Length: 372
Ligand code: FES
Ligand SMILES: [Fe+2]
Image 1 (tube, rainbow, N blue to C red):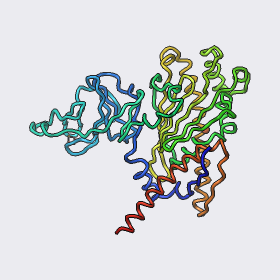
Image 2 (image 1 turned 45 degrees about the vertical axis):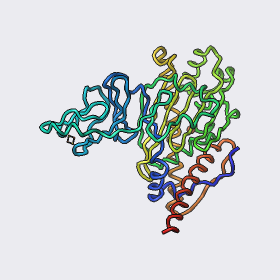
Image 3 (image 1 turned 60 degrees about the horizontal axis):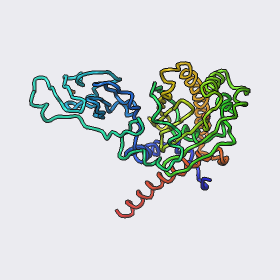
Image 4 (image 1 turned 30 degrees about the vertical axis):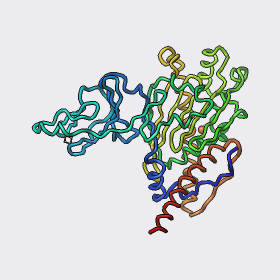
């Protein structure tokens, strides 16, 4: 059971100074999820990484994946957007061209330049078919997580990414991800699939995981799922011949902002990126198990529809919480409800991580102030 935790002050969800501290402390120099390796499949494919604010390009050449700057070495223009396939990567400004590893191969009129110039490179890391940038592999962090293999991450095939701009602080979303208490009230479809009393948490300093088993096949056949979930559940019952996998969901929250959710036959990877004290951008990557990714478009569509229904309901919940806390903030009031154990343990774990990290900065600041 998670230790007693202190909450996050209301001010932290709105304050510009806290926001800057979070960027420096929680988001810089940490491993960042970029995309799936399957995003660049063919030789000379490139993809400008949205999750890095289009600052880097993922390229593939000769089977080699590389992460290079999307900022031109000549006058620092942002060069490309989106994705494509091209023998060279060319800046539209003065047409300098680069190899897929960042070497400059053409600089019009000034031939000598190209010999010495190259684009900066990022530290690209691969783990189970997923790509990251950062100082360390995410894999070792999960080494002791006993259900990592059951998640079948490396058997999932990337399909698409959805972006959503939201008008609230990123932590509201992480809070909601760390509690299951709302599921029966907010998610009637999703809840029809889950055996809520079976829910368990796994605690780790760098992540938390929630494990939920499915309802019994008899319940799954008979319950009142929403029409969208009815379709997905019926598809699963047919695919697995009534023998649904042991876990209905294994959900990892890798602090501060990466969520990997594995359900039978599909996986959702979501990251939320702060863009201001009260604005964020959400990216959600859909993956499907290789057994159905091509062969069963009906199951793929049913899973994505079900997932979208749940995400829409969560979006409304996050907005309402953000609105309530904003009212408190405007009235200069503090409030924090009790953690409802065990359903809200994940939120308590995230708050512990957050407070620990932010306090580390505060004490480092005090120490340096004292030494001055
Ligand atoms: S800024 Fe890119 S070629 Fe000049
Ligand atoms: Fe939810």
